[in-house]
Length: 123
Image (cartoon, rainbow, N blue to C red; front, side):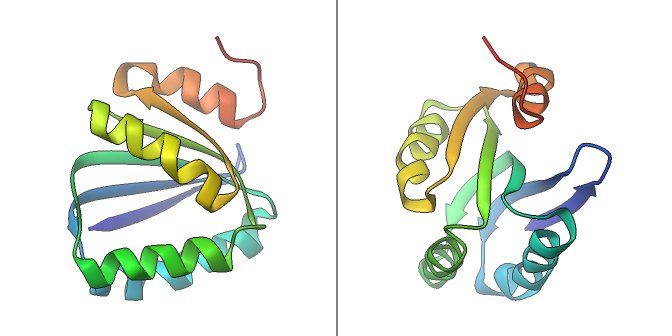
């Protein structure tokens, strides 16, 4: 499932991904994400929380890649919040594909992630 929330005061999108993502999840979420790009401006800053995230169905992964390529120039910083080495590794590999500045943070470091998204220096 993909759940989206706009953090207007801070100017970023909070995206929660959980379980195994499906094409139906992307069919619902992509228009909302594209609206966020228009609403919050470019480059879009994203707080991506991986909550019990277990990956993608193959067709959903294709939808993810198409979205990332279509919006390569629309995304700025992406803070990925998770709890596994695999998620951290995935964030490092995804940054160049998305052409975004991407950093991985553990759940206990979410305050630091939000600070980094707002443009503050982080440790």
